[in-house]
Image: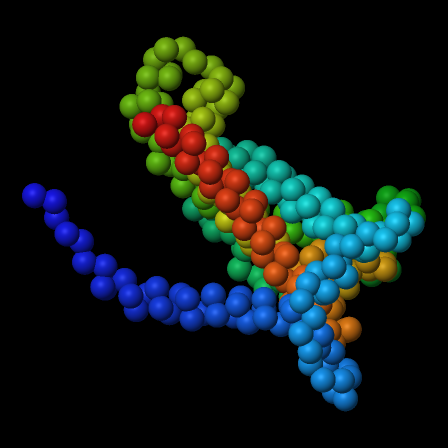
Length: 295
């Protein structure tokens, strides 16, 4: 006899999630169809259809390409490089931390430190006490070694942002990957040693494939966290010089708080969410295909 499942107990949780997430998103979609500028209260709010979307997407000519496409590329570059570096370094650091040696618990605790620091606080600290060419650590060390320090925030803003994102989110990757390594079947590890598998082969042919799902989950969640991050950008480069370190979330912030344009900010936010969901869906499907392959 097939057992009937009662889903009524899920209704309160689903209602709360819908209230907190879907209703604000629907309101954003509605705002994205309005011509609404907060700096011009004398102009009434009117329905504009997809005009706000076309403002970012429409290409008049090769000489007049909207900045959206450049900012989209910068977002992809920052997100992709951050996830790639965090995945590689996270795996290597997890291998180092996956040993029972004296002080290992202290090392694991310390490496998680950056994950609990606020983004805005991190940005201010890095900009003023480290990257500053006059009294920051970077400037002092460079001058001590006889080099003229280059203002990294001004000349290489995008790579500064990538470095700060890696610094903040690397502990998150280490946490998930280390959990995967510590959850490996000890019998498999013992068999690996008995079969004479060397250290390098054991890592890349046995351990890495076994924790690949953990890697994908880390990348999946990291993608969501990194794409929405803008606090570090605000407090370090402020998107500059010009728009060279803009990402889509920071562009949304500037549209609403600088340009005071609710409609365009809503359209840009909606496109950002849709693009993020597409990427998340692709990663999730790859996880599902791999799970189906081995079941």
